[in-house]
Amino acid sequence: QITLKESGPTLVKPTQTLTLTCTVSGFSLTSPGMGVGWIRQPPGKALEWLAVIYWNDHKRYSPSLQSRVTITKDTSKDQVVLIMTNMDPKDTGTYFCGHVVSAGIHIDFWGQGTLVTVSS
Amino acid sequence: QSVLTQPPSVSAAPGQKVTISCSGSSSNIGTRYVSWYQQFPGTAPRLIIFDNSQRPSGIPDRFSGSKSGTSATLVITGLQTGDEADYYCGSWDSSLSGVFGGGTKLTVL
Image (tube, rainbow over all chains, first blue to last red):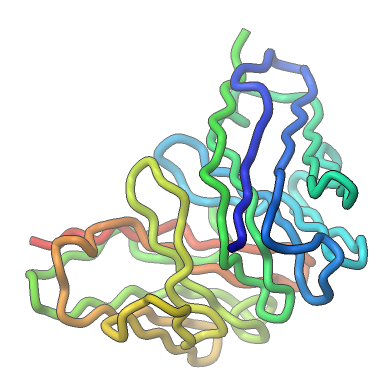
């Protein structure tokens, strides 16, 4: 059974750096054809792709956030980490991680999400 | 503003059929698969259609998807009150990033 769980701070100040961790189980981060992606959703708004990292360590970023976002994985810990710099109140929202099927680039399993508020 | 375009809302009566459209371009839907997600308030999205028209196990056949050119469509037949949710389409873009639609709120009258 595939599960993912996000963890990290619930409150960050403007200009600070956000670090979120996605801990996975039920699959390997090196299984061919899979990836782990990060998606966010501001309150009352639409989903937004942030980044994805694949089994072969290839990474893809949203063009609009590429300068601020870094995604890495630690296979020994079954974790994928998202780092977002220079946080702004507009970055407030729920951050989800998901199991990505690279062939069709869809997300078949999602974490429950974690709400991050950016405020001084 | 989302890369893929969906109607903000649709509505229909129980038992009826509803169609949700998703419009993109040749850099995403036109050359890539489309997926659809259902999201209830306060919960994570759930995959209901992948690879344009495939249903994951456990998704009833009342949900169907199709794609033509740079647009995709989600059809829900035999509407139930429990179908009331937000629906998002998703795809991949040649900019090497995933993209979503703005979401459609389904109201079952």
